[in-house]
Image (cartoon, rainbow over all chains, first blue to last red; front, side, top):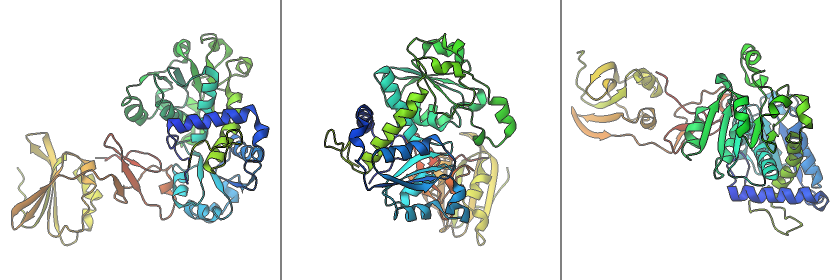
Length: 315
Length: 142
């Protein structure tokens, strides 16, 4: 049995196989509608989330499976002081697989150590969000036709942005990637990303404060929201929340085939006029997320692809 | 220079980075050694590093966990003294994992709220220890 806790839990080869499966699902979703019949997914969401929870639930329903769980810690036994370790031991008796979101970093790993069913990290605090990473990579590959020799700019909150950390870790395994890290000083990417991931692999990176200067060099621009919930101090949030706003005017500085990604939800960091730009790929990411989560659930449950008669890889 | 008596039976933890001796004292929970004599010397002159801290413990040290020392300060040496003579010198290894030796101080980490959750730090290829849950690096604060 395997879990998905960290974006690096799967090898690059496994990740590619998962993306291939997600692509096959996207081309013919109807062929997969009964693959997970009689299987149950538990969605354990200790923190509110619209997109990720609904995406997991849609993925399981699309596969013919069923869903149970809670959308908020307030309606779970966590309010009575139940530990994550106990909750997952109980849920293991009810479901075949679990997706967990938790405000505390490492909670899904804690769950995985006690679980009898596969656990998927659906986001743990500011730490990690591996399924977002998988769908981001799928979107990049679909848009650019490859996952190597690309220049990718990350913009906004690079300190608390878990999607950023996860995606950098994963893309650092691809050949010839260049990283442009665009953020205010206070929201710089954590040092360990640079000293333990980018530098040891000899990957090219650049830190800058200017989105405008970086734009012309980018194949991908990954925008992020400055997240109010990650700040202990409201004053800091207010000061930093409008640091970068992507407008159609700024898009004029970019390559005609650059793609703009965003993990959503957005607040005001991408203005609405950019939505009409064909380079805006953020709603495509949402659709890819469902296909990727379908592929992930199938693989962790060891369910065969009806198209190939095989599992994407053995878990 | 300040003189501290030679040890008869015990250990000398030497070559501690100046300014971190007190943190190390607490980390090793030396305040709980009720039957041993403990001396912390700070800013001792050192030919190699200019100045250093030293901890001397006279008495039974069998309950102490020296595992953490290698990480806290790789240059540290531990000399074991018996009958007034150095019987062996230990250069602490870096264990692959530290379980409940040091604590994760990240308030966003699951270890901050989960009852019965061990504090586990794993050695990274770069020689740092990170909490296995939140990946926060452990740092010694002087």
